[in-house]
Every structure is written in C-alpha cells, then in structure tokens.
Image (cartoon, rainbow, N blue to C red; front, side, top):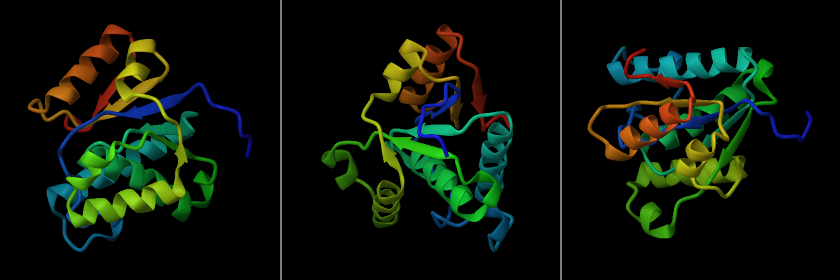
Length: 167
C-alpha cells in the first residue's frame, strides 16, 4: 500500500444522529430489520461503492454519533473485507470536554477508532471551506445546525454531497 495521500477524500459530515443500536455491529449481521440497521447497511454499501469508484481515504472528526459510527464502519470494512485492505481512515480527535460527554458505548467506540486510525489534525469545516475533500457523506436530519452548515459550505465550494437520509 502506498503511503501517499489520495486526492479522492470523503469527509463524513456531522450529525448527532446515532444509526446503530449496538455500535460496532455490521448491519448484515444484525439481529433485527430495524431502520437503524438498514441505515448502517446503506452506509456500508455506500462506502464500498465509493471505494470501487477510487475513494480510499475517509476523514472523520469523531464529533458525533454519525461520525463515530461512519469511522467505525470504515475500520470494520477494512478488517473484514479483503478487497478493502488499503482503505484509510483519518481522524481529528475532539477535545476532552466533548469526549467526556459521550455515553459509555460511544466512549469505547471512540477509543477503538483512535487505536486503529491515522490521526490528521485538521478542522472538518476547514476541509469543506478549502475544497480539500472530494465528497461529503452525511446524514442530514434537517435539525442539526452543524450538519446543515457543513452541507451548505460543501455545496458553495462545489463539493458533491451524499445524504444518507435521502438514500
């Protein structure tokens, strides 16, 4: 695997929405057909499709439910799918005050992600402002202002947006 950055970078957009009933469980192995599991399946399928289209680098600021779960999905796909071994996850860990507000499952998921991702300290909104990402992947519930702001910023900079809520 080359260690050079790939220009095709997917940024996970913020959302306080949690899409998993049990963080870390891949949807296809889920015990029930609940909407959360279907959304996680959509997330995994979307990441795989982006990978097939040349995207290898995914960035998460780990600030919220969706960002944690999307980052975890990248790591699980890399671990469990031999075809995705060169997928990369870059993260910008939040401050300790943010992490201290996580529930126990989110805190455990956060720690696991940090152990398995590459750190890249850069603000997610700056990535949208500078056009440093190729695509924004989000779950825009229409309520969360940081998500709406990031979607607006991405569109203003001509960055395509995939909203899993509309998928």
